Length: 175
Image (tube, rainbow, N blue to C red; front, side):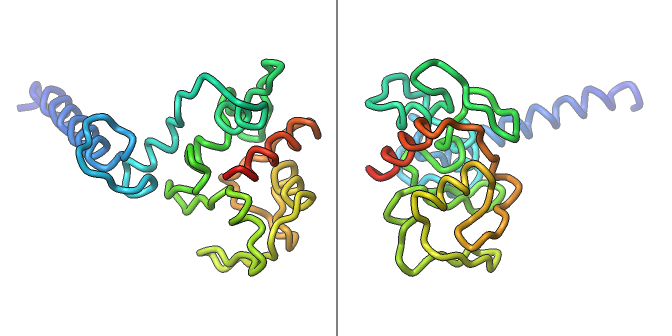
């Protein structure tokens, strides 16, 4: 029996992997194998799709390029506190900037949502007033919301030029 232990363990891992793929393709709205539609950000498929991001290759602006790739129009990868290279906001906030559900709720980055006059109350109970361009810059660069609260540690801070950050904000205003 002892000599079959690793074979049994290997078979279990293969079965778990196949089950994971079936689950992913069953819940990911962007996957070609899915016939119905469940909103992105639901279940493991939403998490995986959010982490994978969209493989967009053409961009109408520098802000859009940064949002999808974390690379500016000069081809420079924008450094962040998590040392993720070549990823942008869409990886977690979704290709439509409407937010997703990963290990935690990831909020929308649509400018309408960010600047809602009512402000925000997050599931954790954290509250803050609406974002302005200035407070959004503090959020991206220092990880601080408009009330001075630190953001969840899953949100990286970014080392971005003023021009790139202005371009990103202009793009988010279209969302």
